[in-house]
Length: 160
Image (tube, rainbow, N blue to C red):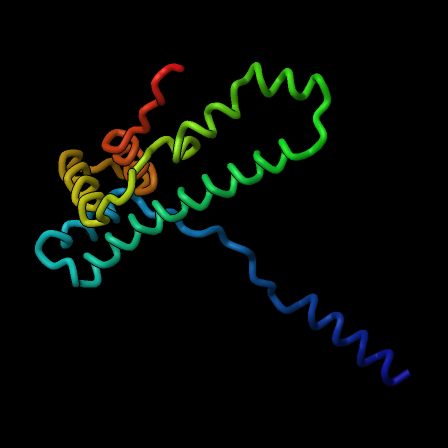
């Protein structure tokens, strides 16, 4: 009886204790990124300069790993037994040709091999400067992605 009451009290106490809610990662605005990237030219070793460089590097790394993972997932789908209909859809969509032809097809930008990180950062910082004043609603990821797509487009292979 004593243990039942203690267990009951513990359950009630746990229900009364406020539970933390999961919060999504806060999105970085383009204005915030620009304020960090303002320091890249004059003091790249500063906390702000390093923040800017590492944000851009992390964005690129995320895009590359996502491309590789998606490509592996699509390739594993082809390894399964295909029906005639599946094969017809795959061939008509031409997906296998596109995957073989683009190094970074899904990310829609291709950095080549190798492109120095300093060069990429310089182009993104210059783009941020050109856009000043940066819109308060624009996200950092959108401006980085836009700059990468414009500065490093993937060129399709020559026709066969």
